[in-house]
Amino acid sequence: MKNLSLFFLVKIFGFFLISISVQAQISTPNNNEYQVTTTPSITVGLCPKPDLRVTAFTARHVTKGEIFGEGSHQIRYYYINYRATIKNAGSVASEKCNLDQQFSPHNQNNFTSGGNCLSFAPLAGNSSRDVDGVITVIVPVSHTAVKLRLHIDAACGEQLPLYLKVNECIENNNFSAIVTQSLL
Image (cartoon, rainbow, N blue to C red; front, side):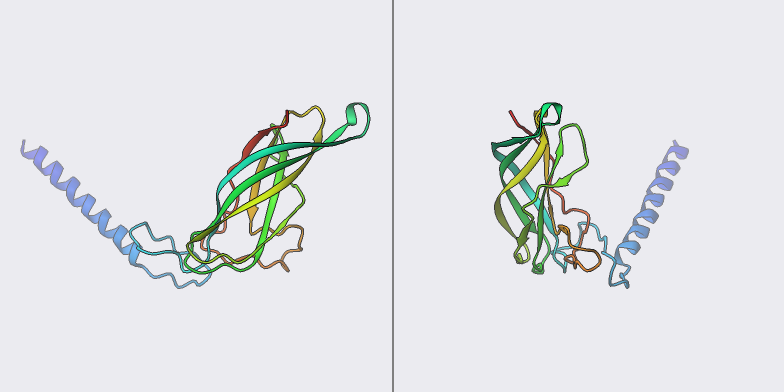
């Protein structure tokens, strides 16, 4: 019984040491102005930069367009109407940026711009905006579905590094969830 009590005491003391170590890491300042501070959710408040993300994305209606080509090389244009919500989860307004509308043939993950790259006006900190748009999809006539996604703060054909991306808290959360849309 005495050994069991000592065992629990050692465990509690070890947990206490780990807890102190974690607290020390949390309070360590970030001296690199280009690095995002990864402070746990204990911190109250928003990121001191913009943080653009697509929080909702829904395809609403598909319109079939013209068919081009002959035989097995026929392709068809589709125009897919959508609604999306873009949120700036940071505390600072974003700058003007681009919203790219992308598609990929069903069962593939190589996304292509669907044209119609939109200019997206600055968005105030901790606010959101609904966007209605149309993605132009060009796929072989035999395809019955397509994958869609949106990319906020996209280069949209502008040459990097000339394209100035919005300096965000988190740079890798600019894609929407992927939506699979039937073309039938």
